[in-house]
Length: 158
Image (cartoon, rainbow, N blue to C red; front, side, top):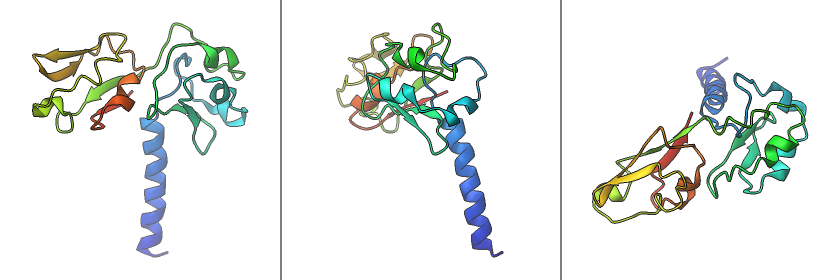
């Protein structure tokens, strides 16, 4: 077994763990769920999502993709979840948004309020005209700020 094979193998393994650690799971997930039950499900949560942000990975485990929209907290995935892993209506998305000061246009003296306008929780505030910051206690992780950012400066993570 050559070094190329080992490198490919370990690279693939690290991607699996990276994907698992960075994936944002759907709202209402029961605490400490492993989503193992989802692997044999027909992914009804994907089909009923009004915002079309729930996707499944190669193993059939659901995750949120905020590239086009955010979560409206409609509860449809909660109602459709047959494996019952989405069964805690009090628990929303367990993630927070972050703004990269290197990529954010406002942090480089360009007036841009694209992220603030869709933030229904008023978690994005500006220090003066520039320098938006996210107040972690107010951020629900809904993701509406992600797709509207013209410089892709906002990420969301657990």
